[in-house]
Length: 178
Length: 128
Image (cartoon, rainbow over all chains, first blue to last red; front, top):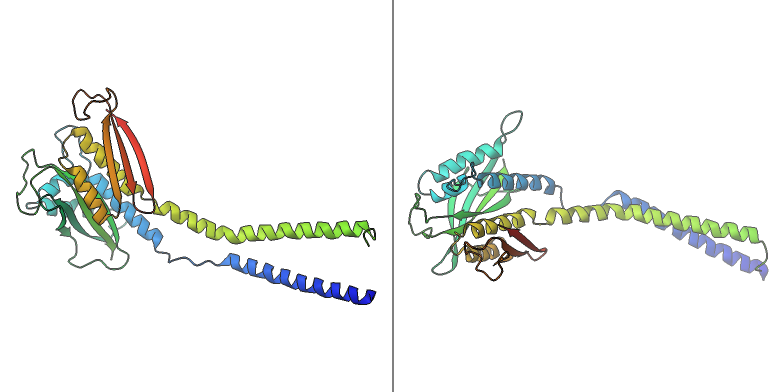
């Protein structure tokens, strides 16, 4: 009877040891790999940060005086005149400049969203774009609120697109690299 | 059976203890990559640019008093285009119970709320 008990204990120990080894092997192999949803989020985030910084820069007046206006505000208020062209120049310059080497190749597509006060609808106005195509893969979207102030009698077109009143519009820009 | 060989039993017990601590360390190493990934995702997902943009815009037109119906504009555009609920309340802080856009109000206080379904953010700004 003593021999059989010892043999049973021996067998159970063998099972336990085998299980422990299997679990250890699984834990070790599981440490090495992990599923991630694609590696593009880092470069997308960098492009998004760049776009946000550029729009913020453009919405800052050059001089700290009451009458000075931010470039972005005057471009949007001049949407029927030189505004889109000037926006294109400044935005492309800010985005594509590099410290050394040739300039970058970032394309954009800018739209203005505004609220129509009469029927409380959201409407959009295509501002400008560097290519006449819809952005494809890996395009990031950056937005910026712009206070457009029409009460100072600046060059604003009282068209049926923008209400002629002080309001806040949302400038949305798609950015992508070709 | 208990008093058979105390030294041997100690050795076996210490062996179990050491192997249990090895297991714990192995599991920590195994989970570390997943923890790092989800933490980094949480940091990147925080809508820092949106919140900052909204706060700066509210302060801008509150300070100058020239906003028109900007609060309504921002609320509906934010919900439609940015999938975020925003609201703000401005009161006068220095002489309390004054209208915040009264020139006699020396210090204003603005409370903003931002929520995009994943992150909710509340903030208070006091300024002249």
